[in-house]
Length: 161
Figure 1 (cartoon, rainbow, N blue to C red):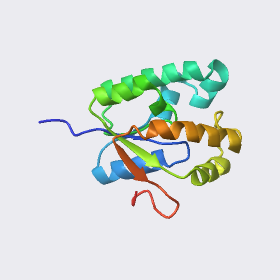
Figure 2: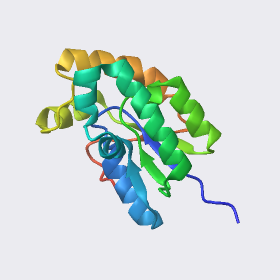
Figure 3: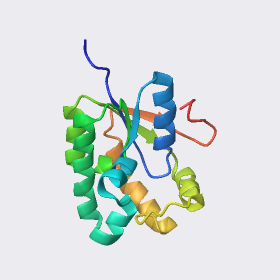
Figure 4: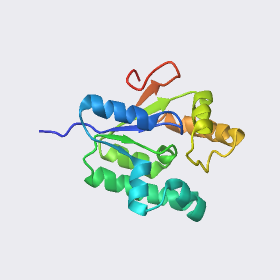
């Protein structure tokens, strides 16, 4: 019997990837994995701490190693990527190689920013609205490479998405 397809959710920070992944996993009665949490467990440091200490290029290497490990050994059928994971070509290739369905959670910047600004989480790549908006614009073109686009706006709950 074939294993069910894994679903990998991508999108900008604050789009609701983890929340939607949890709701989807509950609905499918399967395990989910948040890649940022998985990295923190493996490395003993949060992604933000790794970026602040070692820089974003090193973090992206760590992220790719963690994604590979998750795809190789983790039973999770639903995976929430970090906001920048999909922008790395090697990560997209891994996701395709493992036969995952890539889903872009497309949320408007204003919604993402309101969540970022109201969150206690540190986001070194979104320390200012202008910087975050530029990053959002650059990443949108890459998010569009996902197999499926799902609109996520303020009026829809995670279960509805």
